[in-house]
Structures are given as C-alpha cells and as structure tokens.
Length: 265
Length: 264
Image 1 (cartoon, chains in turn orange, blue):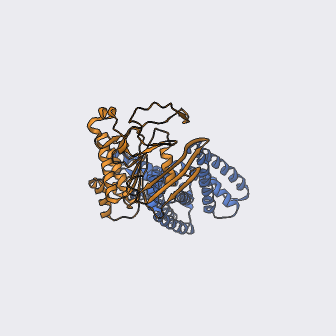
Image 2 (cartoon, each protein chain N blue to C red):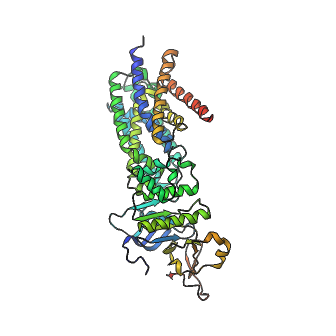
Image 3 (cartoon, each protein chain N blue to C red):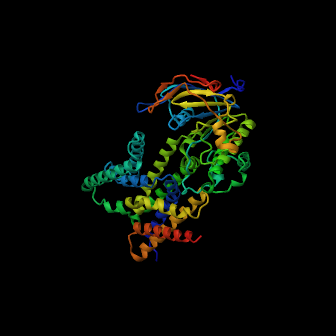
C-alpha cells in the first residue's frame, strides 16, 4: 500500500470511538503508524484530532475500540499548547532535563538536530515561537524515540519558518527512521514530505498519499514561493457534515481527474 | 542576655523556613497559593480532631490534608466548577467546621488556646518540638529531593510528564501531603492564617534574581530564613507578635526586591 510496508507497526488503533457527555468526538477511527513514515492528521477545529492523539498516547481512554502498541516503543511527544509560566525560571537546558537524566553532550546534540545549539542557556520565556517549537522538538528527541507525536508543531511560526520546521522534521525522520504522527488544523497546507494524510472529522473522511494529490492551482497562486516544499492537499468528499457533525451524503458532481485524492470510505 | 526561649524560637522558625522556601517555590510555580491557603485553613479542623482523639496535632493536619487533596481531586473531575471556586468552598467550610469542633473541645481540654493556633505561638515552643521539627524538615526535604525532577516536569506540562512515564497523580498527591506537613510544622511558628505568606512571599521575592529553578529554591530559602530572623528580632526587641512580625519582614523584603529588580 505504501513505501513503508516493510517497516513494522509501532502503534495501531482499530475502531476507536470516543464519546463525552453524549457527544460523539471520534467514531470508528482506525489507523496504523509505521517506522520511517510521516502521517499527518488534518481536519477542521473540533474534528477530534487532539482527542485522537491523546487517546493514542494513553492520556485519555477511548470509549470503544482497541489500541496496539509495539512493546517497548519510545514515544516523543510535543503537546498542542505549552505555556511556561514566567514565574518558573527555566533555561532551555533545565527544560530539556525535565525529560530525564542526560549528559550535556546529548543535550547539545539534540539542539543541533533542530539547529538551535546556541539556545542551551537561554531562558525559555525569551524564545520566539519558532525557536520554542524547535526546542520542544529537541526535548522529544532526547529519548531517541521510535515515534514522534507532534500536535501542531508549527503553531505560532510564520509561514517561512513553518516550511523550515517541516524540513527539519523530515530530516529527523530520514536520520532516525522514526515514525512521525503530526497534527495540523489546516485542511489545505500539508507538507510534501508527508507519506500519508488522514482527514479526520469525527470519523476518518479519507486517507491518502499527498503525492497522488494534484496541486490545487488556487493555493499555488495565493502562496507562491512560500509553498515550496509544501504540497496543497485537495480532496473531495463524498459527503458533507451538518452543524452537529452528522454525515450528509452529497450528490455526485465530480470533475474528471479531481477525485483520485484518496480512498474514500 | 538572650533568653533560651528566643533561641528556641529561632531554631523552630529556621526549621520551618528551610522547608517553606523550597516547597513555596513549587506552590508558586504550580499556582497553588489558594490550595495552600485552603490546606492551612482546614488544618484547624485537623488539630481539633487530633486533640479530641488525644493524638499529636500533626497527624490530624496531615490526615485532613489528604482528605482535602482527595476531595479536590474528585471534585475537579466533574469540571463544572473551576478550581478556585471549589477551593473557596472547601477553604471556608473547613475553617468554619474547625472553629466549631475547636469550640466544642475547648470545654473539655483546658488551656487549649485558639489564638495560638490562628496566629502562632513560637515563643512557647519547647526543645522536644524543635527536635521533631528538624526530623520532619529533613524528611520533607528528602522526599522533595527525590521528587524533584518529576515536580519540575509536572510544573512545566502534565501531559508531557505523563508521556515521559511520570505518575502525575501520585506526584501531585505526595506534594500535597508534604505541603500539609509543612503547614502542620508552621502552625506553631506563624499560625494557620498566615502560613501561606511564609510559603509564597519568599518564593515570589526570589524569582527576579533567579535564572534556574535551583537558584530560586536556594534564594527563596535564604529569604525565608532572613524573614524569620528579622521578624523574631523585631518581636523580641519591640515586643511585637512574633508570627505577624515574621510575615511583615518577608513582605518588606518582597517590596525591597521588587524595587531592586526594577532598577535593572
């Protein structure tokens, strides 16, 4: 099915359901994460992306379904919102050491991987959005993870910085052959390095290979150069959602060549 | 020239300052000031229950602290009311209940003085109590040092700590118990109503001059010790109430550090 078929499954979920106070957040979600593969989870706000990630990480219990985790798998996690209160005096070095006992050389080496070795002694509260996201990534790399889970790694980063950050993530994957699960709330910006895209809106709307997706001329026109390295992912749905997330079937009105975006369910 | 009771008071005050400094930093980092207040207010109930059961007061305070921590943990799961509202409810109902139980046992136990618990009675501390305070402080600091990395990690982000394999609920609960112990020890020094000040004022004063968590803890401890020494000195020479004098000394120190840090 994809180029990573040879890599073993690190984490898989089958038929996950999650309901809170009668509201269905996730419905029949199944996915597999392999080594050396970047999977991007996209979907609108409230689609259940963060809930799904938290369930996969074991931070939350699914209402139904099963999760398989390869025994001994090491997961590096970058949470969605991380605000460090200014009352906590913390240099990057101290912040990295909250992940465990590591020697100075290892701290420097993970910072070098994210191109931020000069920040070791900076206070975390003085970092820019882009620098902070890279330091978070470095912290996740400390334990030499088999799988990186990044919940909106590019938040607070400008569009040029986002591209550079995605390139860094791709380099990390290439060097360590680790699996990567990334979340983006943006339906349209999905980087070219992504091996698989999962579009979530309570259930999995579609999954696909971004290479198969033809570039959408409208987005190239709008973003121009900044889009280099980022592939717009356009896809059509065979259904829509109403305000409650219920599925509404759509009448077929496909234009030729635009409906190969992915395997629809 | 200097009486034995002032030496005892100094030793007791320093024992409490040595633990209030470090734990106060975590209270400030984790925004637990109101929780500390709630724990302190409820400790009167613990004291009253322990006295009526003829036990050492510290057992009652730690027991009530554990009950409170569990109650808060359970109430927070429902997420309908915010933590500060819940703490406000627990804090004042526990204090009211404590005052009622205390008034009931006052009739049975002669010589038990409410004011001594509310505002401290450091000048009446005896040598056996001092020995226990130091044993307690060493115990608290040992557990604190053992929990250190987990405490910082949980203060930064609980989800990230959890994925790093830290048992966040356990860390939180053990820290709350340590806090209850500090409060039990500090009742004698500054009293139930002023304990939170001894936890948060030195930590807040230390922040501006610290670049790392460890620096803040060391500085906060030094400031807490200084506040105890200056407060007791003022109390001894000017005949001021000791507990309030310690807190006022800490507060003056806080404003001085604010002014000093504003000049940089």
